[in-house]
Amino acid sequence: MDRNRLQHQVACMRRSLFDQGYLDEQFIQLEELQDDANPNFVQEIVTLFYTDSARLIQSIEQALNSRPIDFSKLDDYMHQFKGSSSSIGAKKVTNECTVFREYCRAENAEGCIRSFQQVKQEYAILRRKLEVYFQMVRQAAVAHTA
Amino acid sequence: MVDGSAEDMGLMNNFTVLVVDDDPIICKVHDLLLKKFGLKPQVVENGRKAVDLCLACGTFNLILMDKEMPVMDGVEATRELRAIGVNSLIVGVTSRGSPDEKKAFMEAGLDFCFEKPLTPEKITILLHELNQNN
Image 1 (cartoon, each protein chain N blue to C red):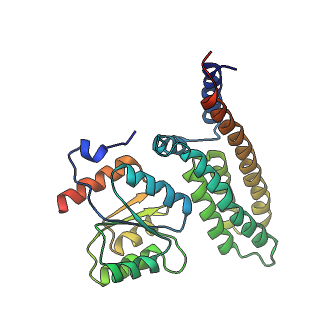
Image 2 (cartoon, rainbow over the protein chains, first blue to last red):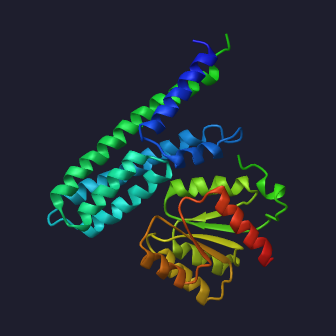
Image 3 (tube, rainbow over the protein chains, first blue to last red):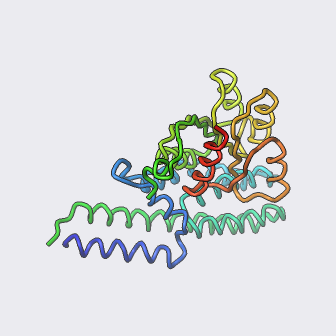
């Protein structure tokens, strides 16, 4: 497929990620930092997010499985996770984190467990979508103009 | 794009900057953002290291201080830095916290408190401030 068509596809996918609420303005801030000297900055940041947040996800799982549940510790972990997810513009993930923290403050264990499932789901969906998106960006970059 | 912004605005940008944050993503984002303005930040991951660095190597023109960090948080670090006579521009960088939390952070000795992550507009404000003070 020629470059123009691929670039058009990239633009469409990018627009849909925003229109469907997966990403917000913060992602645009990251894109604006990317330049010739840092050509893969956005992908590097996203990769760093998924690498770094894996340990937080694990900590939250462990905290949810322990009895009694330490809601204060849970809230700390989720505060960190939410901070990171909002730094990359992960809108749906961040919103689910907010819901989780509300259940946490109410010390509602079931609510926490349920909303954490939602957090993980959005986290996984976004990861997959961004993998596809970055792959398309790379393909468009190396394609020839017809 | 933010390239060459400082020069374009006729601002000096040969200031020393310290980024204090335990979130590697924020550190990477702020590091690149500051470099775009021609600044060369040092980065440490908690308040204790920030205080030790200032004690050992002299102070910085600008310190960007996260609030919640392990070992020593931003509030305590800011308080300690002011207590030892550090008169850098200290800017708190927080996730959306309650007004009471921000107030406590400001009262520890901050000059400004911004929500994270920082943006080119906020860096511009800080550069103006640094230019005025120097």
